[in-house]
Image (cartoon, rainbow, N blue to C red; front, side, top):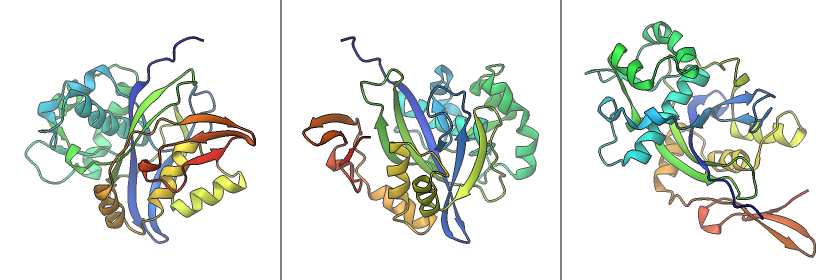
Length: 257
């Protein structure tokens, strides 16, 4: 057998708000031509870029972060901006996040970043912005199973969505978007309204144990994050997908097929 492919570092944000139905999370539907999780309801995110570790001086809350952790946090914020137009950043020297009016002026950079016409470093320096990595709360860490041809080493972060930022899908990697209560997302997955892959479902379930953004943040802060590398076990009654019990999810195995 050939050796497993090395997982690519990636990051994603569960962007949260308090809605009329309680806690809501922003999710996007992947384009059907995307080669990973095509057509699935997922959180905005993607692989880390080489330049994501080169902007330490343009970040807050990263004093204790090594270059890998820095790149993951920068990548998470960059991907959220590219994919849904929300930017966790401040103008240099300011306390508040960029305003809706300022964000509107920055929208052309979304496409330029996606097309690599501008680097994250150039973007931040041109516009004198500082990324608000201090607002990211680590939530989970999943690694794609070794038998998969395309693998990611993904960190999941929670963040409170800026109230005046309009989150909307990019129309390229994602073709639809929704603010959704965790229970509604899980219900939609059961009825076939949504396609929700295993890691997404378990993280939605965990998020659903909280009824507000504050509760979710407190829960995440108290979590011991254990890397989750699922594996399969063949038994007399079928093949099971397994994850470590210490990861803290409500299941440790699930029968496949």
